[in-house]
Image 1 (cartoon, rainbow, N blue to C red):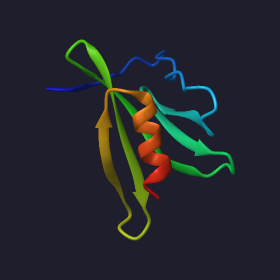
Image 2 (tube, rainbow, N blue to C red):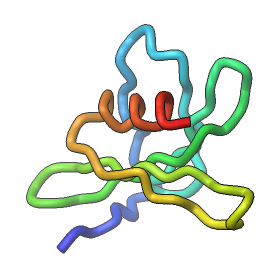
Image 3 (cartoon, helix red, strand yellow):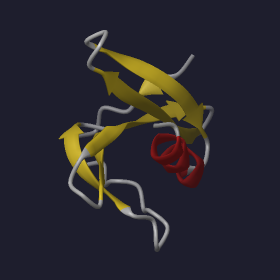
Image 4 (cartoon, one colour):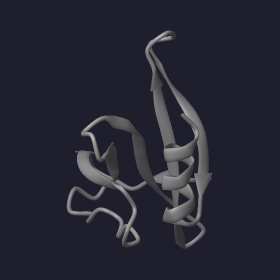
Amino acid sequence: MDQTLRRADLDPPRLPSGVPVRLAAAAPALWRVIDRKGHVIGHLQAIAEGGGIRYRVRRFRASSRAFLELGEFWRIEEAIDCLRFAR
């Protein structure tokens, strides 16, 4: 069973150099992923699982007024790439 991390002092994940996005805190263990133009392209959520951290990514769909879950990843690079390229 996964467990969303709730620590308010959790630092944002370290993004690889050269990735054209930045993170902005939205809630404990939840960040908005923002592209170079300043558009929010989705959310990244840290989830404690099996002694490690998985990253869940979601994108808001205006047509349905709901978040669409795109997946969960062990590597931050894969989570960010999913948001960047699944537009």
